[in-house]
Structures are given as structure tokens and as C-alpha cells.
Amino acid sequence: FRDPAEPVDETELAIEGALRPASLAEFVGQQKVRGQLQLLLDAARLQQRPADHILLSGPPGLGKTTLAMIVAHESGRPLRLSSGPAIQHAGDLAALLSSLTPGEVLFIDEIHRMARSAEEMLYLAMEDFRIDIMVGKGAGATSIPLDLAPFTLVGATTRSGLLPNPLRDRFGFTGHLEFYEPHELERVIERSAVMLGVTVPATAREEIARRSRGTPRIANRLLRRVRDYAIVHGAGSAATTDDVHAALDLYDVDSIGLDRLDRAVLEALVKRFRGGPVGLSTLAVAVGEEPETIESVVEPYLVRIGFMGRTPRGRIATPPAYAHVGVQPVDSVLG
Ligand code: ADP
Image 1 (cartoon, rainbow, N blue to C red):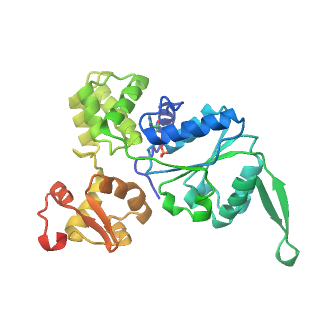
Image 2: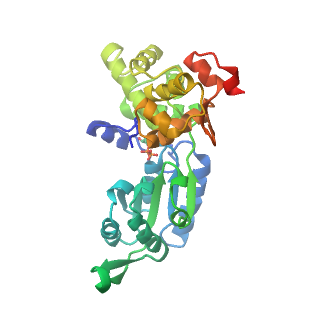
Image 3: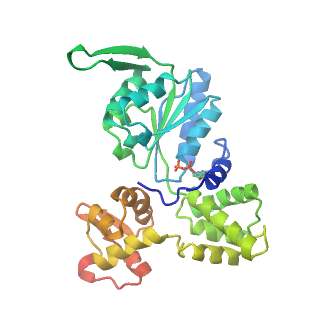
């Protein structure tokens, strides 16, 4: 599973870290989730206990990791970072949980990808701050109970539906992150531009925001490419709207912000499968990607902008998708 917007090298990762807002007040947009989290944190603070467990769901790059960091920061607790794919055995989780200090915030990214055996251990840990460690094998196996320090689990997943019910039910709160509106992304860009030491006029910010797929991570990444372009071809630290157009065209970001993979999926859907319905795995094979990448990264945005529909029989293209790809819709398919 690959998030095409995920930064790949160390420098980019460090820059992404530096651009993260440190408090709920600095966190742009997501008003609903922000209010819900604020109440949760205030209540925990007044009662001097760790906050309830929090599940954050939504497509990559919308701020789940950032919110976990803010939860730790605002409650004055240390933060431990882990991820589902790193927890392949119950033992991995036992080692992690038993090393937590009282009140620590544990962030598990992609929590839906954790091993089944670890999931079951997590139920008890979340509920009673206790785990049972199995010692020995076969008839002589015994379980030794181990008390844990109270902690706050922040789990992140691209879709909460991927989680088994018993796990989902043990979170005190589930926050669904939505794609950002362009005016919210403009604020993210404005803030990041200051931190990157580049000036970007309002029209250029609007253009970047419009082409960022509703995603702050993408907005920040495009801003960095625009800054690169201005340094190499333009007037240094002052980027212009022309720089934005040139840089985004260079990186294959189209006029509405779709990238190569988005367009490959749309073209396959419209041309090869004549608008569908087509099953997820067939569509994934056609564009040479993992089904999970299509489902978690590509589809949510195409559905959000009304280019793709999900039906019980599979994915379908809508008239705006045909228009974007430049193909005349076939009436019988759409009817
Ligand atoms: P996720 O964990 O959902 O994949 P991250 O929390 O890693 O997303 O966010 C990706 C990038 O986008 C980070 O650099 C972060 O600074 C930025 N970002 C995300 N949400 C916001 C926001 N609401 N305001 C400002 N920046 C944000």
C-alpha cells in the first residue's frame, strides 16, 4: 500500500515535520473534529486523567498524525509513534504497551493493518490497562496477567470500516477527517510559505489550493515544488502565479489537481470499461496498482468531486468524469 503523496526522502520528511501545527488553535479547518477533541482533552485535564482513546479516520495527508501529536502536546504527555504494519505479532504489541509511561499517548498509524493476535490483546489493554501474556506452548501454556500504565491510544485508519467492530467500539471517540475546502488550504499554504521563507501572492495561493486535492500534505508539497521553481527559474524567494502554473504542469498535476494515478483510473474507467460498473480489483489491475491504494487514496477524492460513483455492482464514471477525460458519454451505459 503506497500513498503517492507521502514524502519519500529524509529532507522532505523533516520539512513535513517542521510544517506541522503544534496546537489545535493552529490546526486549520476540521472544525467539528477540533471541537470534539478540545472537549475530550479539557475534560481529561479537569479530571487529571489520560484522555479517552481516539480513532481518527480519513484519507492520507489530512492531518491524523498531526492531530495525534497535538493531543500529546496539549495534554502535556509524551508521544510514542508506531504503526499497524510494525505490529505483526502479539509480542510486538506487548513490548510496546509494557514500556509506556503513565499517561503516555500511543499513536498507531494504519491500525487496521495490525496482526489479528495483537488486536485481541489490544482490546483488554484499552479497556482495563492490562494484558495477558502467554507463556509456554500446548498443554503447559499459561497466561500471566500484566498491569499497564494508563495511556491514551490514538489510532489512525484510512477508513474506520476496515476495523473490526470490537476494536472500533473501544474508542471513546471517532473523528472523521474530511477533505479541506480550497479557502482552508489557502491558509495552510500561507502559513507554510512563511515557514519556508517564500512569498506567494494570493492568486498563486488560490491556484495551488485549487489543485491540492483537498489535502494539506499535497498543498505543502506543491508549495515546495513552486518554491523550487521560483528559485531555479524565477525571482528567487518570491513566487509568481506563472511559477505555479509552470511547476504544477511540470509535475503532471492537472487543472483540477488530479495526478497521474487519478487520471489513469478515470481513463480506464471511462475508456476501457466504458464507464463501468467495474469491480475494484479489476480496475486496480488495469492501472497496475494495489486495490487498497485505489480504494483509500484515489477513490475518496474522485467520489468527493462527483467523478466516480460506487454501486453494488462496482465503480461507475459520472458525466463530469467523461468531460474531464474528453470522451462523449454513451447513453445506454449511464441510463
Ligand atoms: P495523515 O497522518 O492524515 O496522513 P499528517 O498529519 O501527516 O496526515 O499531515 C500531513 C501534512 O499536512 C503535515 O505536514 C501537516 O503539517 C499538514 N497538515 C495536515 N493537516 C493540517 C491542518 N489542518 N493545518 C495545517 N497543516 C496541516
